[in-house]
Image 1: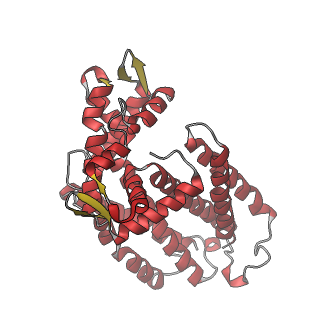
Image 2: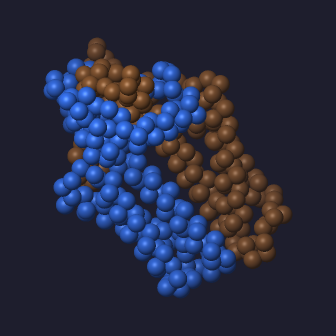
Image 3: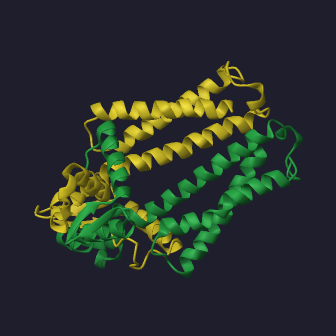
Length: 184
Length: 174
């Protein structure tokens, strides 16, 4: 239980730390902010575990795990899983086009939104859709794709990610267009 | 505690294998509902196994046995649910990622090259939004009336969570 308690404290630091850091971060690689917050929280957990008493000064004796390595690893795994969930939620909540529609609809109240208005939200009228404005520069900067004279070419790191994507899609049987699955 | 952890990992792998078979046999219309259905017996099986099996599971070393049985049960249950949710998220990574889809389309293109127009044709905003609106309506987040989409109760909760997260995290939204 000591491990889980420390993991909960570390997770709180991740949430508060990443929220504060994102307010001052001016770049386009927010994942680095999340990873840095996770790394700092993990280091804090690893450092705090041996330095703190087994009951942390308040845990009941019946809650303590006698085998310390299991308790330590259990807290670390829980922290990693919860962080992954938080990271996914943050990206979904802030960047997903689906969430964008729900947030916009909430602001609009009873007016609702037509398909054309939803498309306009994503910059359909612009030469480059918003989904590409954000993603393509990152793919180029990351060395996954190169751009030459208006044509984008897949580079070996991008090919590896694509191959992994194909493999995962085959595992879940989502490679072919399916109802309820995304063409994109 | 190790007993609960081992049982949780074992059951989540059993679920993942079964779910993989289900997806291969027939990709369900509602993937999340399918995953919840397949997973539903696992917490019950976990509790039953935790209560019925010996403390050392017949394999654990003596030093790893001990501590509160109820804490072991609860910790394992929490881990089982966390692992399930992580599995669900991995499904969505594979199924929904726009970036991965874009890279796959490029990999399949002649000479692995595409212009922006080609990319927007196969993976652009029209393809994406029509699909997302349809799926959100199918899953009960939106309702469509006379060609206009409105929030359903489930969508109101989602929209509220999204609005709070966007205010709190200040990421550049799309």
